[in-house]
Image (spheres, rainbow, N blue to C red):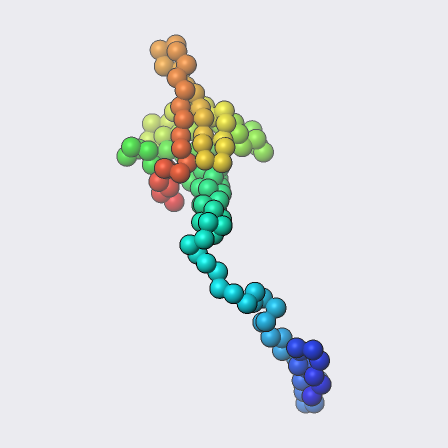
Length: 127
């Protein structure tokens, strides 16, 4: 048995295979993570915003006031433009901006432009 720095090599004579055992000390920072710290809270919030944004852009169904809607991307690769569809009735509005936590769109009602704004933090995703 040959000992190197933090690595133990075992030569198995019958099999002819070299097996290396590595300890996991390099992944330990030596101190526990404080989940209540401001940094961890900020990182958790950023991860939540990223996951909600990804769910919206990928077209998962979401609920707003007991109606289910879905986002559909317009041109391929352009995620900032598209449409929001009601899963039952169809077209609802055009989307002109998709941000980290906010979606801005517009629709026309009786010849007048109506702005639509969704807060991604408050949406309830179905799937």
